[in-house]
Image 1 (cartoon, rainbow, N blue to C red):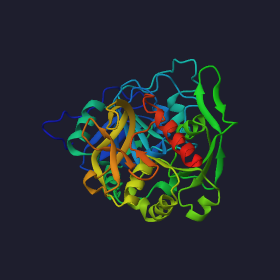
Image 2 (image 1 turned 45 degrees about the vertical axis):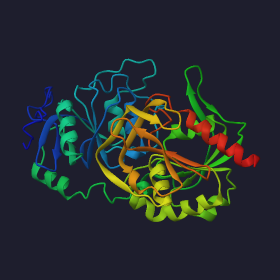
Image 3 (image 1 turned 180 degrees about the vertical axis):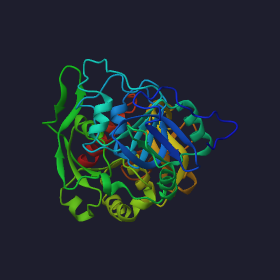
Image 4 (image 1 turned 135 degrees about the horizontal axis):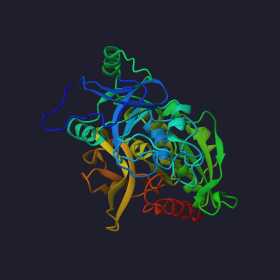
Length: 399
């Protein structure tokens, strides 16, 4: 097992009831092998091993398309304790390639639960691993960056460790990888559902004030719900939809969604379309990957972060007002502040490391943020951004 002398060695913290051998493994590209108890789907999956610091919302995290190509380590130990249901999903298909937790998944205790995390993960092909010292694993990632790895589950504990290590080392990694086309919709569709309420579930937007075309690079459902709740009639289109097809829908505003992979790779087909959309003068709002693609369309650059920002407790400062928002984040790439051209200003920054978390065009009705204002999971401090977008659209329509 290869470890840093300054970082504790991750170790198993629970028994393996089916066999004396571990039934789950995490094999990292540097040769580190962590043994634990497998659950969820059998088999193995390769991806970038990251960590998420959210205490709630594991189902939303696991179905966030932005996690395509990633294996998620949850720093909060009690994952699975509220079960799963059919409402708290952010996409129809599974997104994350695996999940790692400290404590064994217990029986759920929540009035909304419709099933266990174990069964839910198994039914969606997600490999799980429990009994891992996630605190030490997180410190390894913080010290050395997000590694490539393979997560594996076999109820009989039979693993070809050399083959798993080779798979981890052979995987090319997220840098340079285009993944938006893997998670985008296959055809345009209308979205009308609004945000969830305890006394009624999801509502319906039946009196929209404006038409928003949302380009789906891996859009989370709650982002679309927030747009609808703010008064938008939303038409969702695939990531590679051309400029003419978008404009034929007669939008009042354009939304660029979140999504996975390297923004520079997605930019090859997305940026030429976005630049033409910018030239129309229509209001444009981007989130996460959409934020990064807008920056690239402006002529800026992006870079791969060491371990990224993932969790529901990230402080972001709005430089326009001085207000600090606690936000939800999920990104492994960021915009290079030094590459921004004239006419594009930083509106938000991370108070963790000073990275760019928001931009606005000084002459056009265009803005974007790195964080996830839809709060799924996460706090609701940034809901105002959807209203800000609709206000820009109303102003543009009035003009």
